[in-house]
Length: 62
Ligand code: SF4
Image (cartoon, rainbow, N blue to C red):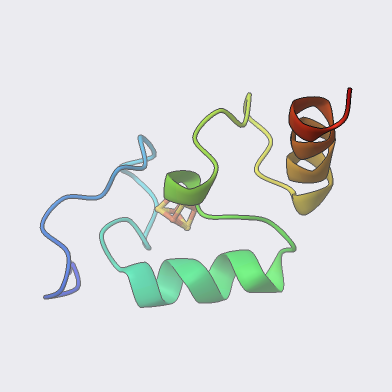
């Protein structure tokens, strides 16, 4: 069942039990050291904070 505060989840993983439940999604990703899809769209299949850091480095460091 989806969260009443969410109409449509941006995450393409529709089989995930957290899809459409932002509160559960945030907890899951906090516990797994990663980001929800909607906060890390260009993740290349890896939503880890380590990968996010790599991408931010490329973006902000010359
Ligand atoms: S971002 Fe992660 S927890 Fe949230 S719906 Fe997608 S796969 Fe599931």
